[in-house]
Length: 118
Image (cartoon, rainbow, N blue to C red; front, side):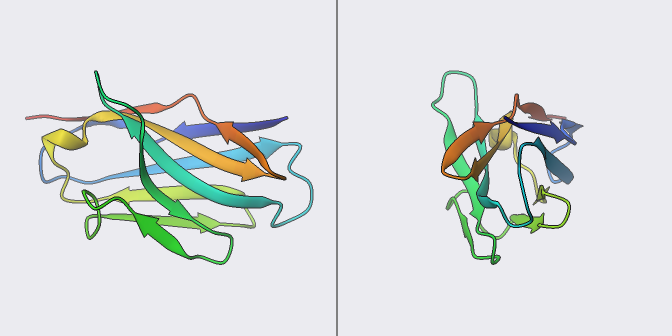
């Protein structure tokens, strides 16, 4: 089993920044066993949506709504993925979930709440 633990959520004012982290642990195996890592989010009443994803080699893709404001990165040695969120907007308020594919199995974290409000 693989566990994903997110951290870094909280309350921030519009225009502010937050950095989310997600550390993977458990039966990961040797280095680079984690394939795609990603962040999703789900706002109240909405479906879960992809925010950003990154391959082991560093190729990234972003939702149109966050491109230019959010940056996803990963540290393969630490089995950790990050999401730097800048210029936050009220509509970014959601629970953010970490996702990782390990040996073709999809794993999810429990989520961390990000609230953008004045």
